[in-house]
Length: 514
Ligand code: KIV
Ligand code: ZN
Picture 1 (cartoon, rainbow, N blue to C red):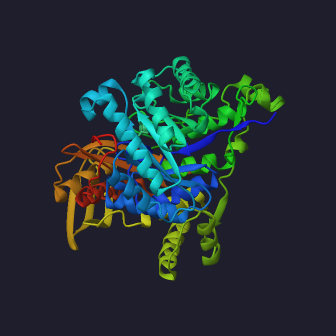
Picture 2: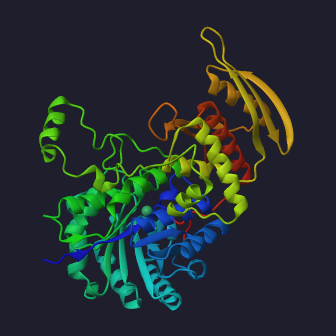
Picture 3: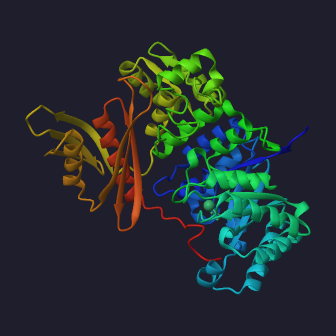
C-alpha cells in the first residue's frame, strides 16, 4: 500500500537559532544548510530575513548554496517583512515564504491589540502579498495551541482562499497534550471546507516535553508536514526533534500511514555538526543521537543483543549514522586529501590562501592528535572563522597547577592590537585564566555557563568549550576548541567578549507585533 509523504520542514536555522545564545554565523548556517540538504530535508527554514542585515545575508547565502531542498524565510504578516523575505530568497532553486500572525485570544488582545476580524484581514492581505512574490506560501496561526477552534477554522479557510498551500498549526508555548492536539488537527481537517487544497503542518514546542508526541499524534490525524529541529534545538525548551520524529515514523511503519524521504545515515553527523556549531552538547541519554542511545550496559541486555540484536534494539545504530564517524585524515595526509574532505563536507574554500591557512591549522592539530575525524575538521573550521571583530586575542598562555598550591595563569593578551601581559590566581587553571582576562577586560559580564565537551573519544580529543556570558539582559555564547582545554576555555571566553563588543542586535520574530 502506498503511503503519503510526510514533509520534513527543518527550522534549526530559524527557531533553533532562537535558543538563547545559539546564534550562528553566515558561514556556519551555510554549512548546516548543506548538511540538511545531504539529510534530504524537504524544506529548510533558513531564517527571519528582516531580523537584521546579517540574517538577510544568511538566508540569501543558504538559498544560493543549497540546490535540492526548498528554502524558506519567515515573515510577519506585513509587507516589509514579506519583501525582505522574497528578496533574500531570490537565489533559491525553490522558495517558500512563511508568514504568520497570532490567533489566540491572549495574543490578539495583549500583543497585537487587534480584533479577531482585523487579524483575519491582515492574514489574508499578507498571504496574497506573499503570493505575488513567490508561488509557495505557508501561513501559520501563532499560538494555535491556545486558539479557539471556530476562529482557527475561519482564518485558515480565508488563508487557503488567499493562496496559502501549507497551513501550519503551531503549539507556540508547548501547552498541548497529544490526544487533544491530534484531535484538533482532525477537527480542522474535517471542518474547513477547502482543507484539501493545503498541506496541514504542525510546529510543536517542548515546554512539557511533549513536542514529538504531539507532532506524531497530529500525523496520525492527518498532518502531512512536521516542523522540527536537529537535536530538538529551539526557543526555550526547544522544538520537536527531527531525528525522533523521523525514526518514530520509520520504526513504527506499522502504525503511521506516511513516510519521509530523509537519508537517515546523515542524522548523527548532522546532530554533531549542530552541537559543535552552537555549543549545545547532546545529553548522553538523548534518543537516537545521544552517546548512550545504542549502548547496552546491563549484562542481560548485552547477552541478548549478542544472541539476537532485535531482543533489545528497535533500530540499527548504523541506520542513523553511528559508525559514519570515519577516520579521515592524519599527520601524513596531504593538501589534496584535506581539500577533498572539505569538499565532501560541503565546506567552501574560496581561495588558495584560505586553503593554505586551514591546512597549516590542520597540520598543527595532526601533530597533537593522530586521527582527525570529521568533527575535528568542523571544530577547526569554526575556530578559524573570524566570529566578530577581534578586540581581544590570545597571544600566549602559561599556567602552573600543582597539588597544594593556588594555580596561576600568565596570559599575554592583545587588546585592539596592544599587548597586555597579565597574571592571576584562581581555584583552578581555568578560573585563574578567566580572572586574568577579566583583570584586563573588566567587562561587567557574569558567567552563566561553562561547559567542556570532548569532540571525539580518546584522551587526545579536542575539548570544545562553551562560555555563556550575560550583560544587561544580553546573552552571548562563546566557543573554543583545542586539545588543551585551558586554551580552549580561554578562546571561548575571548570569543564571547568579542561577540559582545560586536553588538549586532536583531529583531525577534515573535517579540514585536505585526
Ligand atoms: O512557535 C511558533 O509559533 C513559531 C511560529 C513563528 C511558526 O515559531
Ligand atoms: Zn516556534
